[in-house]
Image (cartoon, rainbow, N blue to C red):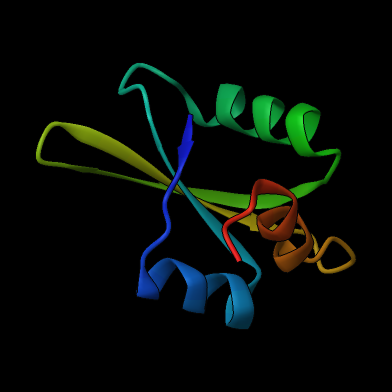
Length: 78
């Protein structure tokens, strides 16, 4: 699981409380949710996935009382 740092991804972090990750195509939404919650000590609201050019991306929306900007700062993205 690798965080994505593009202009669009940073905008999603700041405006919609969404983190974007590139991950293994075989991971299910349940596995993604469990891994994100354990790694960053947050609660996940919902997950959208996208497969593009043989890569899988997860758009992970965090619950309102868990700011994505804090997680991004811990990861050194912002």
